[in-house]
Image (tube, rainbow, N blue to C red):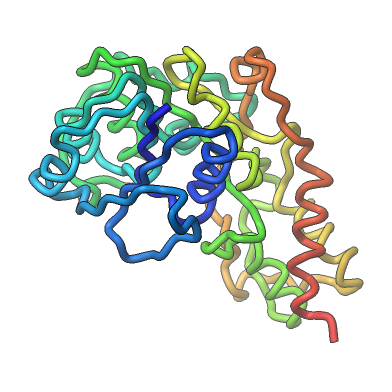
Length: 287
């Protein structure tokens, strides 16, 4: 199949492209051209500024794709820009569990994009969560297209450029005091390689609508700190005047993946995944 990946140069987008190529698909990467990729002559490349509709229209004009993945879409305006300009049979949008307002065992019905009030605007007009809600709402209310919105939780991995999870290892290893305001908050997570694999898995399927995708199990901030203490063999220094934890303020956010698992995709267990990742991060601090 001919597949377009908008945002395929880093993190799970990079793993998505590799999975698609390994499956024998013909892949085109669309980016601003600011981040080099590692795929050489295996892919075709186009460049556009997705916040500029004329740039998008110019580059996509006359091109047809069997599937289009949209990994870097944060506003209803940009959703509309792509869907007005692209010719594709299937559109897979990378959404987020941030569309929910917190909770445990959240299922897809806990946010309904088919009836959510649409407000148009650009990325700077909304916070991240509201931008994703509006992206989904424009997609499902305004366009009759075979589409799936994959709601990922916190994405973790060795290649995590946000370094959110890494920061907990770093502060504890260096003996820096941390302020953690939500120690008992529990989160779902997914490893970046598996996020890319799941997206690729959906390419030739017919699943539509919102779909949660997460590793099996969930973890609290307190458990993350405990795992790190065990790996480093040192206690975390905690206090209200410490460095704020990267996940501070996050509410409970655990996902039901019943819909995704009904497709027979097998998600990894979170606990061994996160243990291995924390051990990898800890290597940076071993003398």
